[in-house]
Picture 1 (spheres, rainbow, N blue to C red):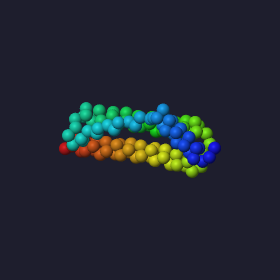
Picture 2 (picture 1 turned 135 degrees about the vertical axis):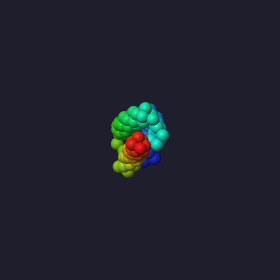
Picture 3 (picture 1 turned 45 degrees about the vertical axis):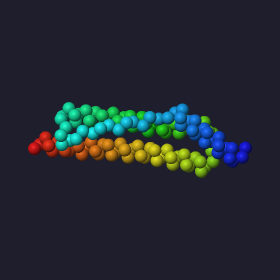
Picture 4 (picture 1 turned 45 degrees about the horizontal axis):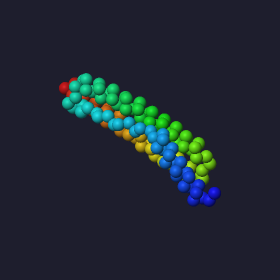
Length: 120
């Protein structure tokens, strides 16, 4: 089999594996405005953030498992293709972790605004 055919088969398998095992990226939750939110709204916001982080952890596990399954289905790949796939998964993983950190930081900032308002 020539290289072009192998790459075409690998690309087809990649597309099939990704559509068959597609991981759902969690919907971002809304963070309450700490300057105006009630205690119940802040508690609901905290609950939403915790749920989002749990869903994001599931998403992270899913993309790793999905990639392992795709690699198993494809068999031996050329090293440069394997590296490209690893880089792609790393970028998705790191972007998701960055998003979790941004959301947590945003909630913490709003929580501090709530606490500062409560002390006035």
